Length: 116
Image (cartoon, rainbow, N blue to C red; front, side):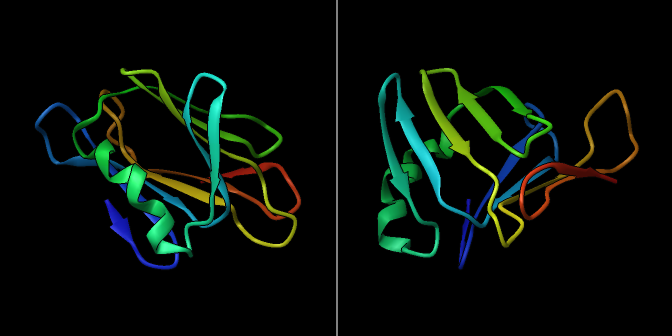
């Protein structure tokens, strides 16, 4: 986990080198079930509940064409990020086996995603 003016998550590949980096620069929703709280990553003290994700297992991650990002964890917790009107809300980069080519997915301002 990396915290500065954004929230960064490194997702490793079962003991391998980190393969995916998620950087969230916009307001996010965090919690489980219907109990979600809104957190601004620039308010670092508000990020404290996310520290318990340190050893959590990511079971599902996807980005929608409209710029939403969803990260689901094995214990039922979820992080949801909506697109931002003015800024890149999130950025995902890395490489995943079996594809060894690097990738980047970015939520573009106003909605949508860019793939590199």
